[in-house]
Image 1 (cartoon, rainbow, N blue to C red):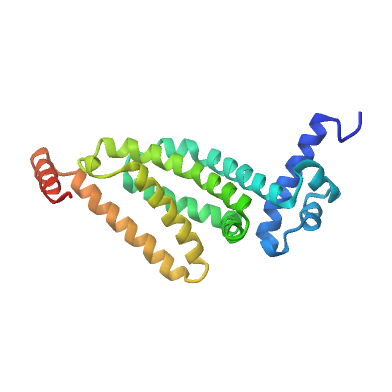
Image 2: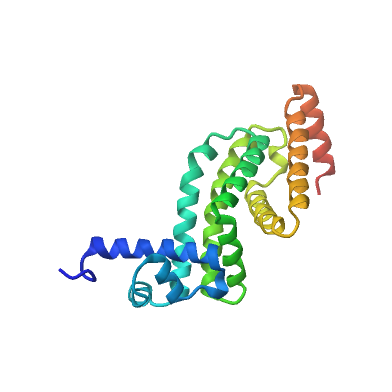
Length: 217
């Protein structure tokens, strides 16, 4: 059986190309990402890019989904154990450091840059971000249901705001690391305020909810 017709060999080659695409984005940037550079990183013939994926854009789109699924799977168990907003923010900061050191923040930046002019890549990048947002939404729905502030917050919208904030923070850090660190510090300070409200007694919580209901549009 030829390598092209061997399912296990084909799957192995696809995996090499997906890893090669992500590595090329990290090390060379999207402007230098081509069939030739991806194939070189993967250690295969560049014709296999087109045989398995049809085009470089299709390969990059698949690599985006592939890479994101790997990263989300890595953190899913830890996300399931988060019990408060402050824990979520602390986890986000820790995850950011891990992702930056592993080079995945650089990949995200390159994908977002390419998505501005490549609709197929934009759709794939959006789908990848949606995987993260879905996990964040689960955490927010769970922790807000037990919070006196829960009825005043939309977990669906907040999950997207949190996702967008961290994407922006990751990109902002590349031009102003000190400013990005201060932004994360400010988010942690807000989580302290939320925790303080959650730790109030029943009467005080009732008063807070009453006040918030009066000011709600």
